[in-house]
Length: 147
Image 1 (cartoon, helix red, strand yellow):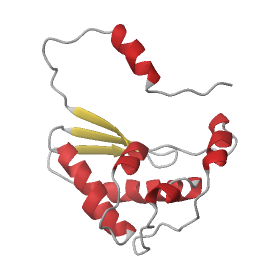
Image 2 (cartoon, helix red, strand yellow):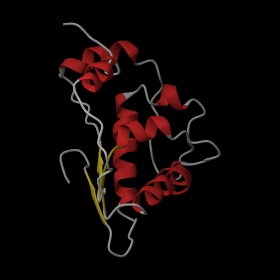
Image 3 (tube, rainbow, N blue to C red):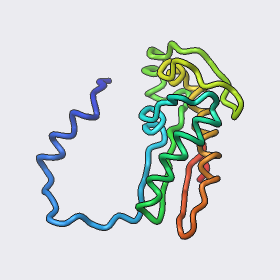
Image 4 (tube, rainbow, N blue to C red):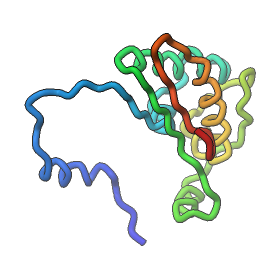
């Protein structure tokens, strides 16, 4: 099996699409939770609760200002999947429990290399995202196999 870079597809897709003259009104924002966690570094956060409140939920709140509905989709890590072998080769971090009072690791990238860490973190952040409640806004979030 060959592996590739998703970004390589961009030039191909752009060559087969046309630019819109006007921008459509956006009412729903669908976010990749795992991508957000990679992008939103825990700078200044002492605990996972600090990270959830001051970084992650803050970002979601900003996104929610511009739309009526926000969908937050999380990755699942299935042990015997085709991707699991690739992840095992990359996995060189250490296991850390994710609870509201536990400290955020100094090396975020290393922490995110361990599937169990990501699974717990994603479940924790999915649960925390349910605390966002703004009038007239809807939030849908996956957590493991549930929505």
